[in-house]
Amino acid sequence: MKVVVVGCTHAGTSAVKTILTENPDAEVTVYERNDNVSFLSCGIALYVGGVVKDPEGLFYSNPDELASFGADVKMEHDVLDIDTEGKTLTVKDLKTGEETQDTFDKLVVTTGSWPIIPPIDGIQSDNVVLCKNYNQAQEIIRRKDDKKRITVVGGGYIGIELVEAFAEDGKEVTLVDGLDRILNKYLDPEFTSVLEDDLRNRGVKIQLNEMVKGFVDNEDGTTTVQTSGGEYESDMVILCVGFRPNTELVKGQVDMLGNGAIIVDNYMRTSNPDVFAAGDSCAVNYNPTGGHAYIPLATNAVRMGLLVGKNIKEPTLEYRGTQSTSGLYLFGWNIGSTGVSENSAPVMGLETRAVMFEDNYRPEFMPTNEKIMMKLVYEVGTKRIVGGQVMSKYDITQSANTLSLAIQNKMTIEDLALVDFFFQPVFDRPWNYLNLLGQAAMAHEAEIEQESMNAGSN
Ligand SMILES: Cc1cc2nc3c(=O)[nH]c(=O)nc-3n(C[C@H](O)[C@H](O)[C@H](O)COP(=O)(O)OP(=O)(O)OC[C@H]3O[C@@H](n4cnc5c(N)ncnc54)[C@H](O)[C@@H]3O)c2cc1C
Picture 1 (cartoon, rainbow, N blue to C red):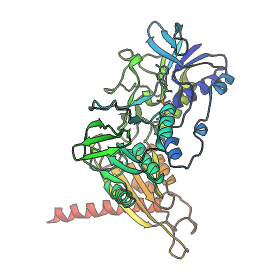
Picture 2: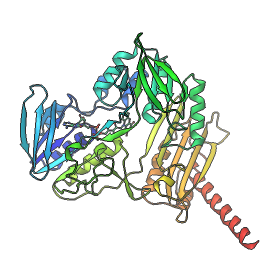
Picture 3: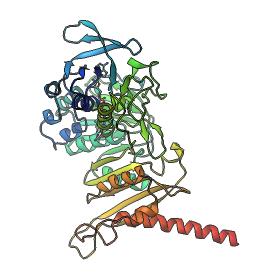
Picture 4: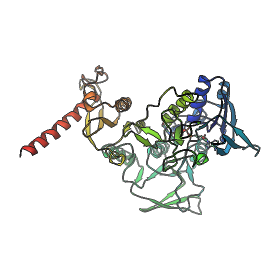
């Protein structure tokens, strides 16, 4: 079996290792246009903020390791063209410029994603940088020391992590977002308003509801970010307004969502059974809705890559889908979210109700304590849990993982209210906070039922 893997960061690395572990006789060729594999982009903010001291440590594999599994690793090779029916591809060696043809029995498309670059005037300014791969990380790191005013465009988790990192590094930071809240895809306003206040108190300028109209380079080397609400002079601008799948190579050859994300079945097969795909190049099966969604995360990438390896010869292990579970650390806040938020549920076609729950995480007789904030989102009628958010100065982020499990297994609010969790006063109360969250949802349902009975009897 001759396998060609195109692209080798998280999905590709995971696929290559699993293909060769499961099929030691497979002939695997990897084409990667960069000179590295497995770069953890999440480390960029950690490096900028001084938590990670050496960016060289932000890799967990390398071409030699993949070669030790038996792969023929062709670094700095750009795949220019793929014919999935003819099973051929054209590749350019970026060091020599030479173009060659190759063939395959099975193709693995792990070409990932690329930052969205909106058509804004002046976006090609040298001061506007992207933040995705190792080269861009090095560029940000190289430039950052002599830059004082940093503007981050985009208040998703990548933008927010960079805002924190630059603020911790002593920079004057402005965050611009066209929507009315930061982190709006992950968290509801009960959480984001606390975080926005905290950021403002730390001197971060948060410019919400402002669309960027243009970037104007000034003679003194700075760039003015012009928005619908103001102008922000900046030494460096980081653009993080989202990602799009990098799938031009197979466009029109396999089924895709409207944004170009490749649709795969539960065994990572595309609409062509000899073409597999994984990671940011793909749509995921989103368990809260049962439909497809585009959710580019490293967690999805490594999981889907593994499944390519398990299933490339024959279908053996099924994909369990995703809840898009995410964690974030922001100025001492430990934040976790999974599934839909109350705000995003209607957009996803779900009719939901939600409850907030706030408490101390453990009994008051303990010498110290911290407040916890939790939210549960569940489907009207079935009471199936479809989303959850948790936030505290105490680290309860693993509860987002527990809620992820609840969503994946289609548990109801009653299941959560009564599930067996331990009690130990160092950690929680006789009822764990997740049980209490489920019970808060049950109480809310009982109230609604009572109100409708009262209305019926009037
Ligand atoms: C700043 C930042 C922070 C993040 N933090 C987190 C986090 O905390 N948690 C989390 O789960 N996710 C996080 N992510 C998302 C995560 O990085 C991506 O989901 C992940 O990189 C996807 O991996 P992938 O292998 O599918 O694709 P990619 O990482 O996009 O890699 C695709 C690879 O394919 C190569 N390639 C593409 N086209 C070709 C071609 N024609 N020829 C040869 N090679 C090609 C590219 O060079 C690249 O190496 C973060 C992302 C960023 C940018």
